[in-house]
Image (cartoon, rainbow, N blue to C red; front, top):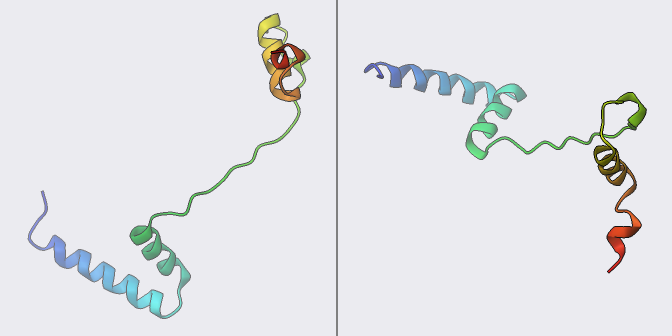
Length: 80
């Protein structure tokens, strides 16, 4: 439950953030923009190589699926 003075504290915090942003402090500017517009989406690219031999417990079907992901669909997937 909010106390009657919680709004005043939040207003004071917002006033400091706006004042510092206007002075050029990017940390406050970023925080305000993130809260108003939402955080920008970030992308993550992962690449690398996998050696199936490192995972001897994989079944032949699992190995085939991994090979398909690495090399693209096999010939049997292109037959129509």
